[in-house]
Image (cartoon, rainbow, N blue to C red):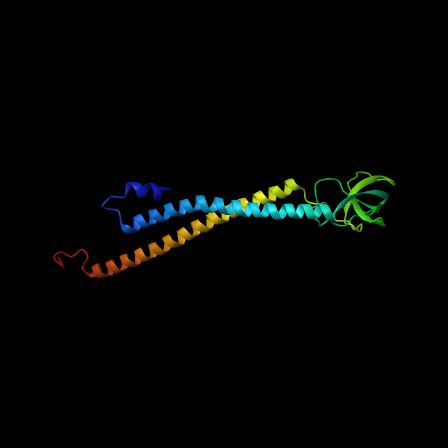
Amino acid sequence: MRAISGLWRWRRNPLCRTTDLAEAWLAFAAFVLILVAAQVTGSLVGTAAQEALQRSVRAQHEARHPVTAAVVRKLDRPPLDADPETSTGTIRTRVLADWTAPDGTSHRRPVFAGLKDPGRGDTFRIWTDDHGRTVARPLDPATASTYAVLAGFGAALAAGGLVEGGRRLVVRGMLRRRYTRWDQAWHRAGPDWGRTGTGS
């Protein structure tokens, strides 16, 4: 922002170098690009992610079904639950349960039940596919929308970072060229610097 404000103040200043103006214009262009490109990129990525995630939500809701399972018995020493979708802060007890799949087949398998103290005959809901195999709960539309917003926000930040990174690279190249010219000028003036009557 200093470079942008300096662009207006220094536009007719005799001490203003061409490189100063170039840096200020570059900062202004990067600022405008960040405002425009970040918003457009975030909007496009967020919209695309929303459409893809909502399609996935619909597909999951079509392929996964809630069924009622009945506890046969509680199982001791449950293994670690590595599924991030089921590893929530709720109480989950490992039980042997019976249920009937949407295709009418009967199943008896160990599953996790959201029951504090399960007893024989207690019922609870699980999610299965068409053939009765247990699956993770389908993604809900609100969570999918949250993921899409986060994707759009991340894309906007990435676009802004890319523009700023490009600006910094260009400024670094400009500084390198400026220092090279200074070194050359000092090299030419070095032997005579400070001597009276030399070359003047």
